[in-house]
Image (cartoon, rainbow, N blue to C red; front, side):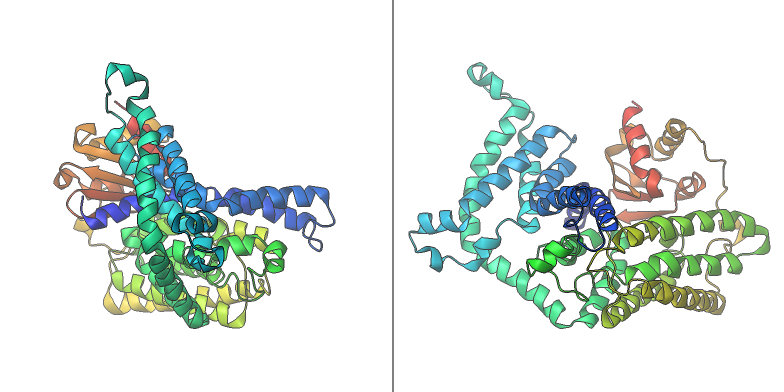
Amino acid sequence: MNILGYLQKIGRALMVPVAVLPAAAILMGIGYWIDPNGWGGGSPVAAFLIKAGAAIIDSMPVLFAVGVAYGMSKDKDGAAALAGLVGFLVVTTLLSPGAVAQIKGIPADQVPAAFAKISNQFVGILCGVIAAELYNRFSSVELHKALAFFSGRRLVPIVTSVVMIVVSFILMAVWPVIYGGLVSFGESIVNLGSAGAGIYAFFNRLLIPVGLHHALNSVFWFDVAGINDIPNFLGGQSSIDAGKAVVGVTGMYQAGFFPIMMFGLPGAALAIYHAAKKENKEKVASIMIAAAFAAFFTGVTEPLEFSFMFVAPVLYVIHALLTGLSVFIAASMQWIAGFGFSAGLVDMVLSSRNPLAVHWYMLLVQGLVFFGLYYVVFRAVIAKFNLKTPGREDDEAAPVVTNQPTDKTELARQYLEVLGGHDNLVTIDACITRLRLTMKDRSIVDERKLKALGAAGVVKLGEQNLQVILGPLAEIIAGEMKSLR
């Protein structure tokens, strides 16, 4: 597998631990709504909910280790997740400040500061990746009959614990350098203030076509480089009291996405609809309404973005620039809201009572401005360059649209047939909105038929990797495809 394909695999696995964040956001959001003044101090029920959500947020490093190991394992087995946990415990114990002082024979006050931060998402991801590779290599190994009990999957945690001892000694030498580099990168962006937030948002959108935005997000949203924007925001008053959060600053890498996802992209959808040929407007309207609603309500934007990402890449670059501008404006004005899943209406409502959500309602005003901006810019650019956005395709280039089956098993069967069947698929996986496939022969896939079945877009990576953009159905279809043997 090439480097890009491997990074894709890691990016896909990152969605497993990230998927638990909505649970924390909902619990803490309801808690803040119940007790908007005391933040749990004035209501036992609110305190219960806020602490329950905080338990998830505070455990993100170990969740990354377990989730990535599970997500990258060849058959999604619990033994891989257990190996990830074992690996994380070994590394974080051996590299704790006290253990490092004892092993090196130095006073505790001379232990590099990096080891006080050894329990973080970066180390969790590293442990998860290593554990998954060990699982994929050793889960089928058969030992001598005398040791047969420890064969196969039972062998993996044992091998992982031994390997992680070696990894720990390597990290003892290189972790301070890695940590210093990550912190310097994070600080360089933080020192740019609002401009740095805008730059991050610009690249966040640009990386979506290849699915590597998850790796970039982990630097800014979690504790990889010391920023930890989402957990610190969800921590609310406790994060403020602990000095981890600053009102008007924490959340700056999230807030500016709300005007884009709730308003900007629906404005683009309206422009695409109005630019469509008269005979195609009804068909385009059904697609755009569904995609715009998903973006506004939940913050799931890929079905809409993929409708113009490849047919009109200039629009996508404009979209990335406008996203950077939105995040820059929100950060500059200190209009702050945060999310546990994505920047849609649900997360805005849940975060509105968070003590770190300041002037959040101004994001709605900003959103209305961006709705108009997206509509005017998209409409003008489509007309100026005669872009073939949905509904403007040449008649011979338009795919033949079939009636999408309502039965998910039958729909999965049809996707499987277009993709060449199980014999042509090496791996079948999915994240929130994409089928992620590794194929023996990608050339036999008919993209027109995939889009006729309802796919919003297709992404080719390397020689064998294919992503099919399905929206929220992706995981369901992936599960059905696996069961159709």
